[in-house]
Image (cartoon, rainbow, N blue to C red):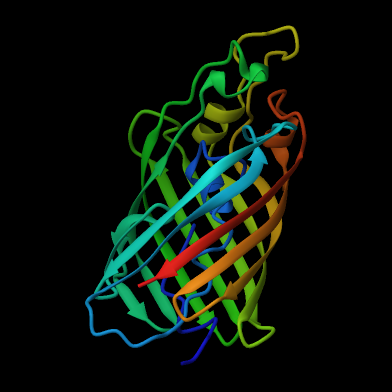
Length: 272
């Protein structure tokens, strides 16, 4: 049975990122999933259903820009029907409208969990960011050991109501019979509404002056490494180490205690 980084990739992201800081947003939640869906294995199955289930834990900032870290559970559920329709804790709900081995493209709906002022004592007095459904499109291309992923999302319910663009370029392959390594870089562009929701300060506090975001822009860039060890064709352990740097208004906001944001996570998974 063949292990591969290319055609066997049947799960696409966006932190991910997966996609910046903690489980309070779609982007940050993806970043904590430890690359568990980045490397799949081709194995014979006559079922219309394919998927991955698993779980683990991660260490991440309490909120985007925080310099305090917390441990969070990392559930993983991702299922596809006939390689077309999917439902996932990582990818949302959507359709692989184009589904060739080297190209995937389609629409999807994702969920941003928002941010509560109770997430950290540092956020006390700030407005909450309500959860939001996001409507968007994704693209994934594969060329040998190289992979490019991109997605665009727009908040469509109460919450940030903003636009987010994610760009991810990675190279990967086997470093041993059972081990895959993926190294990549990622950047996020956020529209003005998104930036205002997460980085504006409208009421002065003892530690946070009033701050107004000046339009949209690239909010962060980062790099990551993912190591996947395959105990068998179905059972695996995935670990991810990632660092990102806040930029522009995201970095300048009084809400951001630290421009450097770091993540470490691990997940046991089962492919079916």
